[in-house]
Amino acid sequence: TRLFIKNSTANKAEGVVIKPIKTLYVNTKKGVTRAIVKSKTKEFSEDSKYHAAEKWEQSNYEITKLELLKYEAQSLITEARLNNAISKIGQVKQGDKARVKEVFNLYVLDVLDQLKENNEEDIKSITSQEMEALTNEIKKQTNTLFNRF
Figure 1 (cartoon, rainbow, N blue to C red):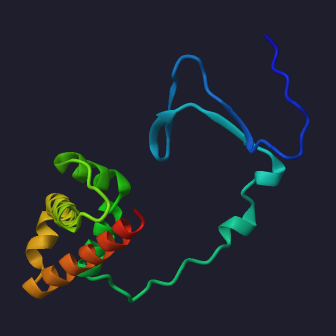
Figure 2 (figure 1 turned 60 degrees about the vertical axis):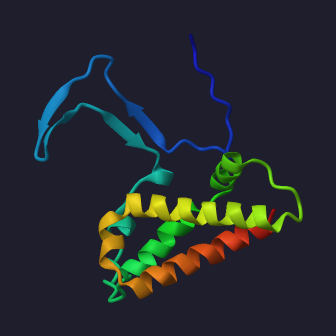
C-alpha cells in the first residue's frame, strides 16, 4: 500500500520516527536502550535557542498541608460524586429542604472520607482548627456545586 499525504500547511509533521519491526537494543552512555531513529523537520528542530533557556528561579513559596488538602478536596467535588450521593438516598424533589440537607451532608462526608483515604498522613498531621477550616472549605465548594443544580 502507498501512503498519500495531503500537502497542507495547516497540519505540519514534527518529524519522522523509525522503529525496527523486531526490537533491537543498543548500548549508549545512558545505558541500554531501544534502537529508534528520529528526524525532526527544520521548523521543529531544537537548535541552540532552546538550549540557551534560563532555568527558573527557585521559589521560596511553600504550600501548606492545609492548602494542599484544600486543592485535593476541590478535585473531589464533582457532579459524578453528587449523582452517586443522590443514588444512595433516591431522587430529591425541588423544595424538599430536609432531603437536600441529607444529600449535602452525605456528599461532604463522602468527600472527607475519600480525602482521608487518599491523604492519610497529611490529615493526621493537621490541627483540629485546620481540619475545621478544611471541612468548611469543602462545605463552601459543595454549596457552590449544589447551587448549580
